[in-house]
Length: 177
Image 1 (cartoon, rainbow, N blue to C red):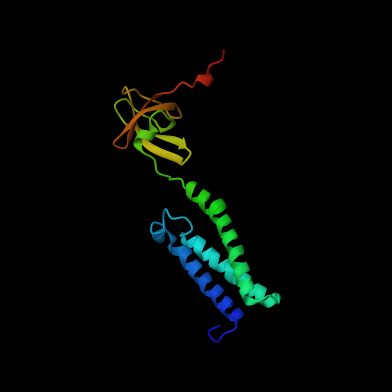
Image 2: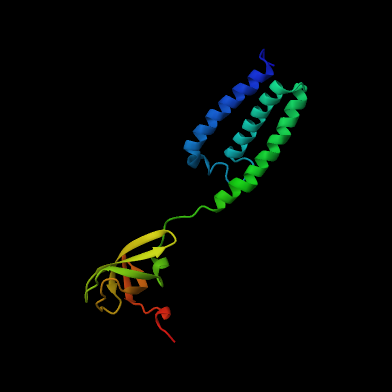
């Protein structure tokens, strides 16, 4: 084909697509929106299809005595099956598992934190809140302008303009019946 052996075409295809895959790894965030919503047009699926087909074709041409047309049909079928499996069992769950580390001030209300800088009357201190996203440190003031000591647990009543308004928190688990 084109004056080259079919093994050479498979090998060059594998090398070129491998290089394109590496470039896609670095620049995939820019291309994600272009193909969004159309299954199997994800560049990762297309590149995996071509890579698997080229690798399989090269190996089968070198190791078997099957005809080139049969090898091409067989590798395309195997590549389609493997690419579908990659798409449905790897790419779709990974895209669904994306979690944002961002939080909103509204989401802080009702959470329990710990005072790390004492809160004086009519003043500001600091609290830390442990969330699934990590530990958040926020400026805090007493909701009723009360003083709160270091290492006290506090309940966040509201968050506004970068400040959380807190009250002392008495955990129901602290009481013995």
